[in-house]
Image (tube, rainbow, N blue to C red; front, side, top):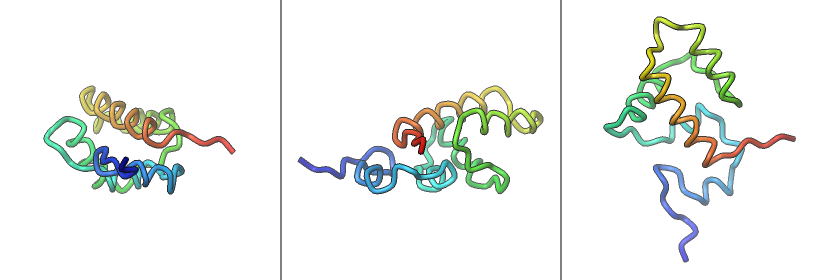
Length: 94
């Protein structure tokens, strides 16, 4: 059985190698697709102020302080991408 199952652009072997990957790194590795999540990914890559959030609350705080930049669809897309990020790279509490 292949331990390098492709899931998006990050493999399960990547997960095992570094389950502490930051959100910004995840965004940089993530494939840009023709979906709202892909649109968010493309925008997030260009956002130099996007935090390397460790929790959804950190990212939500960032969005809440830039309300003119974040419309409801962007927020929903960000939440989906965050959920996928945490599914692939669960938080580690040391």
